[in-house]
Length: 199
Length: 60
Image (cartoon, rainbow over all chains, first blue to last red; front, side):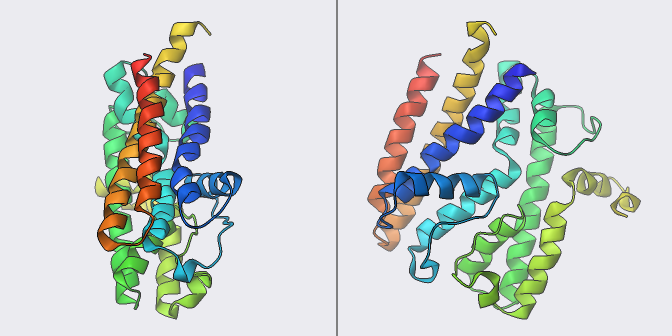
């Protein structure tokens, strides 16, 4: 269990330190402190930003920010859970340390939990991107915003944030923020026929 | 905590950093292909990450 705490702490401080490097080396001309803040804010799904001029920014950097939030949303630790059983370290204990979901052991293996949660997360993101596209966003904007909506994080590709897009996109965002905020265990159970647990 | 207990932590964090490095490498490729101008930043970040992450893994 203590290893779980150590790994969680190390993962949430060290990974953003390296994820900040592209922002630091880019033509944004920001300090490493700003880059680390941006990266940590993204991976922790805080959503605060030190960057301005997003509308004219390199789209790859915008997508990098979105991906950081998307990865942060699913949790670095869920990725680690897939690795831990190989190393014969208890992954389920770590899952309980990391996640706010206080559910009982709903699936037999930690790796199976990680796989199922990842599948739900990916499905929600794709559905959200489709809804955004139907609401008038470009495919790039839809994908970037979907990757920040499901983890309820908030990075945008525009300085105007969601205010720069249509009302339909804002409604879609509202619905998928609620969807992303629900415990993913409920989706897994709903797939098993337990729809009433949603309410 | 005894020293050997730390080893899997270093190993896993090293692997995660290397995973991030591969992602940065992919972004470097995309940036270079569209000519956005930050491919070198992603590539440098990827190289640094893979070096440090690799050290952590190899030290295991």
